[in-house]
Length: 315
Image (cartoon, rainbow, N blue to C red):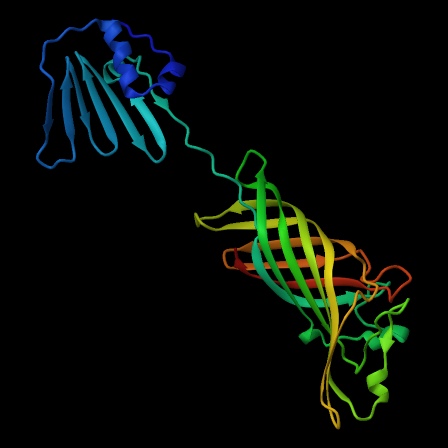
């Protein structure tokens, strides 16, 4: 007898429902007593219930219903249903359940470390003329980021999507000259007090800022031969809110000590930056550039911060 089976109905039913449908279709009758028997290796179980025989192995379920066999195979996240009798007649129906698509997961949540710097209005990192006092010890001007929260939204694929989250950005700018920044003044500039004091020999002077950051990144990933690693590239913007700033001066000589001052130094309260990130496996790098000036317009030198660094630890 030709069997007409709805593809959608079978995909939605479990093996018990399929048995009920076949029972109505063939109207089989049997008086076999309900029995349960196990094969010696206990890996295969066979049961007979009112004319229906079911054999189960770890990946395959075989159901015998009268003269008809149904084979259900579950493997690699997919389910296949076959009816061998129909296959012989060229009418076999095979249904494969699609495995759940992989979710897109971006690259933001991480611990990052890099080098700080800033550019003048001409986008030069060499401070000249009236900005010469702001020259940095580039090797000691460090950036440290903790991106602790991430949310990824895929574009109906696991290879591309948007990434956002939250993070903290810590920046240290070490001055090459024995100066610091003026605090509590209408315009932030150089404080030359330590240069004029012969009893204080400045050995370290730095300026620090802390921001809360919120990114919006577009990221795409390229699969490689390694199942767990992909080449990724992301670019976008990072918004920032200043939550702290300070200066610290360490000096020696007749007088030895440290002076630390907390102030807003007329820094821009809000800023945005451009970022690009690329990596594969354990090698990941990033670069940030902030078109928003470091100081408020007209209240300090015109400087534009940047950072280049490594993504050390993925969170």
